[in-house]
Image 1 (cartoon, rainbow over the protein chains, first blue to last red):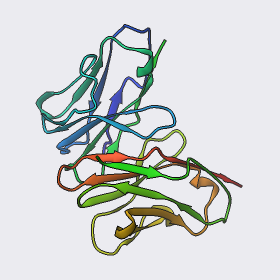
Image 2: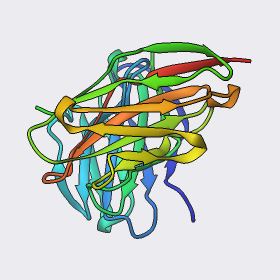
Image 3: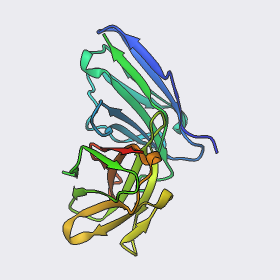
Length: 113
Length: 113
């Protein structure tokens, strides 16, 4: 079974530039998550989709972050403009349903300089 | 608000020592409980989970965890650790109503050969 795919794996950008991350969840998984993980901390939920609808985006900095899930499958997370404090690993994950096991991708490492 | 607290940030053990990692949560409803593990260079993956029934659950690689409802705890244990258990361990709680998952900040386990 193919896992959660993410790209790019690594990205270095200057502050005020923009960046986009792509995610392809496990086939058949209705729930898709984007987490931000800063070094030394646990994953923090940015946004949760159920099919192509947003379930929770309460911790998404909406002035600079946006996310969409096209046709209830792939998803894109965009940051514009980036700040130094956005340096983190961005984890995409999926699950069959919100209450069940979450399957993570390998993460996209972002460094903002 | 939902929260998860992991008491130990970094644990160092010798091989064959016993392990117990603490996890306490705060949530005003029914929860599903998880331990995830991240081995060096790998993505986060499920170690074990508790949904209902026997509060003592067994996971992969000899790990087990006990749910104590009265203490809001879900501690992870292993009788005898191996060098290959060196990893970061995350406790997570998912509310069964809203399906929102919250992660602790993780415990880094280093096992010395």
